[in-house]
Every structure is written in C-alpha cells, then in structure tokens.
Length: 255
Ligand code: NI
Image 1 (cartoon, rainbow, N blue to C red):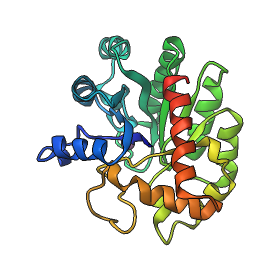
Image 2 (cartoon, rainbow, N blue to C red; image 1 turned 30 degrees about the vertical axis):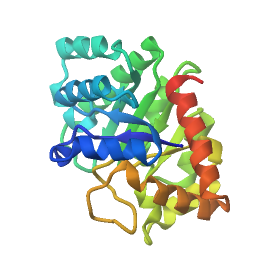
Image 3 (cartoon, protein in one colour; image 1 turned 120 degrees about the vertical axis):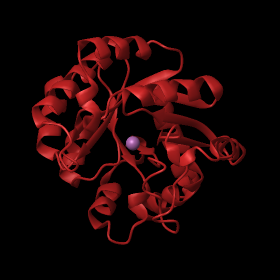
C-alpha cells in the first residue's frame, strides 16, 4: 500500500471536498498520509485532521516563508504541539530564497532552532529548500548528528548534492516533478538514488504529476509518480510502492 509522505489537506483548495477525497484515498489503497504544516494556523488545522482521520499523521513546523510568525512565545507553543499524539515529524522547515519572503538571517535562525527542537524531541525533520542549496547544506551539516534524521522534500538540486544528504542519512522526497518532460536534472538524481532512500510524496494540492499537470493534486496521483520512478530505475511500480512505504515507516514511525 502507498505511503503519502507529504501532503497539505488542510489547504483551502480542499475545503469543498476534503472528506470525500480523504475517504477515496483510504479506499484506493493509501495506507497513511503525513499532513505537513507550514504556519501556526496550519499546525492547528493539521492536528485537527490527525484527530479526525485514523490514517492521517501530523508534521508540526514553520515554513521559511512564515518564520516572521515565530518568537520565543510562539516557539514554546510549537514545542508543546510537537508532543501531541500522532505528531511524527518537525516540518516543514528550511530555507526559501525563491519567494524570499523573510530575511535570510531570520530563515536560517529558525531553521536551526527547529532542527535543534527535532533533536531534543527525537523527531525527524521535513526540510524544504528552494534556491538555497549552499545555505541549506551548511545549516544541515551544522545541525548534523546521528540523532537527527529527515527527508529533503521535493528535492530540486543536483545528484552531487543528493549524495551529500544521503551520506548524512537523509531520505530524498520525490514528487510530481519527476513526471515532467523537462525535469532532466531530477531524473538523473532519481537514477542515482538507492530506492531504499526515496520517499513518495505529492505536496498536494501543488505539483500534480503528468497527466494531470497544472490541476489540483491529491495522493490519488501517487501511482503516476511511483511508475515514473520505476521506469527510471528499471523496477516494477509495485516494488517502488512497497519499498517507499517501508522507508516512510522507518523514518516517521521508527519501524
Ligand atoms: Ni509542502
């Protein structure tokens, strides 16, 4: 069965039919979903979804674009939320110099604090990094410890950089972009990655794979992503689904 390692079902894009979609996911063989928060308000909505749906788990963290919301008081609140049942990761956290919504120094500061929080609470991290390759690597190396595990979600850098993260024990999240014709660099990365270190993800409602590119995404599209990975690696789609499921459970559930 499929493990969805990164979704945003609290997004307003699902306000009209959230219950239907999640029921369909369950019926279509999605075994588990990690819903990832990005802001203080989405931490609340993510935890509410985790309470409501037995197969949905929560990641609690503040996205680099939203780090302006953080101060010692809100950070203390965030730490408390990490102790709620069904919280399986700190995320998504990281650096985003594409949207560039917050000062780089502020993004780096709260990225580091949230990685330290994950270490303290023995939770893995879900890392978002866009147009910030060098600074992300530096921050992750600085926080590196055998106690800190995680995934680089929606990986968008080179094979060489993927290797550096593999060497530190990280998983690499692969989503809809791998199905795009123009995604040459990512396809090279996927060919190089051991299947044992890949997580399947949608990042829905964003980044729908071919043949649904541009439309609202959901976990129901994960088979297209598994199929594309299988083609690149010369393995059956079923095997991609099975191994990435084991990988996600190892990371999020420690099994
Ligand atoms: Ni995301």
